[in-house]
Length: 216
Image (cartoon, rainbow, N blue to C red; front, top):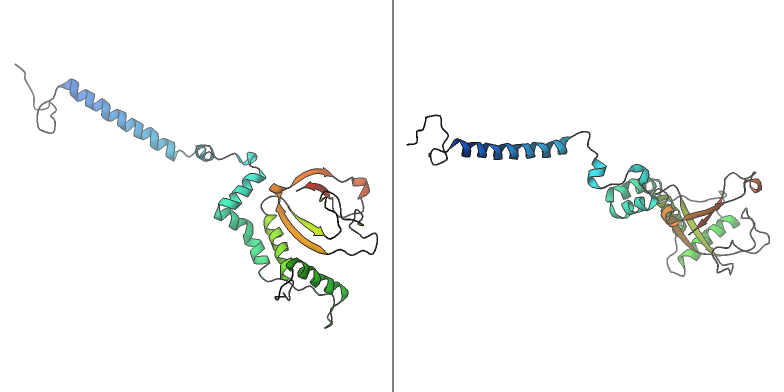
């Protein structure tokens, strides 16, 4: 004959259950609570490495290519890069050499640069918008890494872009009176540029910058 007491546990139907079955159920409940506690501790642990948990690379491991991918894919990253250039170039400047109504030779040459880049069209920009657009783009792309580059294509007849413009010295000064037209402009960010060498400092001691040889 099985005897029961008022304190003996019962199931949902009100039936008495054995102590062994009751302890087994308690173990299951304790295991569930323990696993949940461990799970929440991992989530709310302040010392956890969020970058590692999300699979992000360390800050020291980020490359310019990573920044470029952020710029192309993440709207916030692109906005961070472009917000200052967009504000700075909201109004394009006017380039004037004198206050006279007639254009100086320099001003005429400046306007011709924009006309050559634009090509033949019935529309003609009064502010040389095409040139300013390239400068604005270069300003924006320079914010992806440490610098940006502008490739200027002149009508000097040289097809090899690795060679300098003809009839120009290292300072970019003409060695004769030959004039070249600017046919095209291309803008690159640092991820598309490879520095392959630096100029000799002894040859440029009187220059205000240290030019480098870049491979586009």
